[in-house]
Length: 95
Ligand SMILES: [Zn+2]
Ligand SMILES: [Zn+2]
Figure 1 (tube, rainbow, N blue to C red):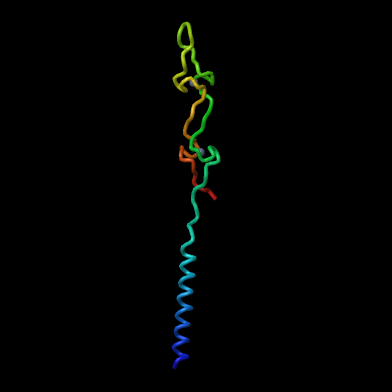
Figure 2: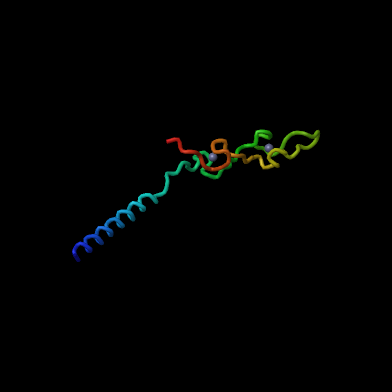
């Protein structure tokens, strides 16, 4: 009689072990569907030469002295949202 009880409890233990292992496999992280945008290195922003002043930071407007470029604030460079990831810094995986 004792051996039957022992066998039954062993069986239960084995079953519990299988369930525990099964849960472990179920809990693995889902595959990521997005990756860091290579175009902007994940920053979501790109800086480039101002097209209005062509990088000079000034534009000819007045009769005497050139005006500060309003498009880039006189810096000559502009920052804009990355067109590849629309400023999010991440793109959807295609593979
Ligand atoms: Zn980007
Ligand atoms: Zn400019």
